Image (tube, rainbow, N blue to C red; front, side, top):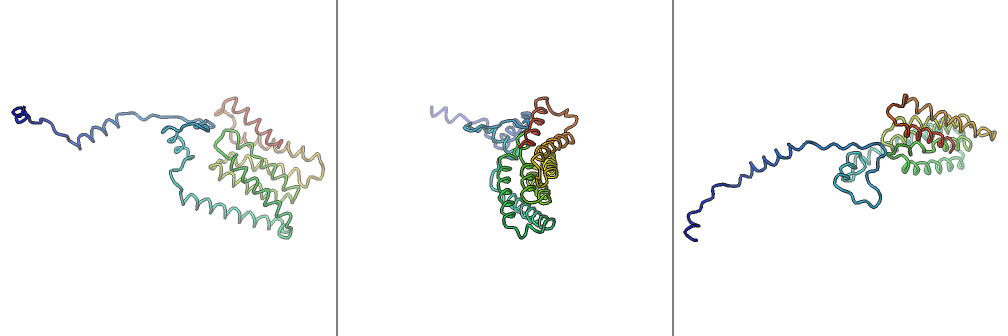
Length: 239
């Protein structure tokens, strides 16, 4: 045995550089695997165990952050301060009495907080839920409780807030602002009960025309998707 061990010599040696090169060549030879995510598709449900593929999908659509980002926070803060400052200035400018009416201010603050919280849960990546957001209802409440001028300002600035929260969706923004402005303009101070019916009808018509402005001839949507959007537009007006 000792004699054989002395005669045996290795005829190959480990080459780390060559091994790493072969591993990289093997990785490059694998074609990329493409996965298509449809709008409104469910990636994870409550209680599901997240796989690496699920985590990657959530990261790609921006729903999963690796860590807290200071710049994202600062952007949101700058947007909020700018929007709030301009909204308050515009309201006081077009309707000066609001500055001396504490009750009107309290109503406005309360409605804004409630609708912002609702937007947090409704302005999400979904094919129809954001279009059910009842901005028109808030606009009409402000119109009949405070003044139609204030309602128009609130509608525009709340629409911009939802636009930011929903990930910059211009069709949704136009849809919500058009419906809110139409409802508040028709309702006014709600001097007659029948005006509520006409205001709801105006919201529905504005919703339809806003969707048509972006989606005609609806070739990119399936028939069930078109039907859902139209139904949501009606329900939004009914709210």
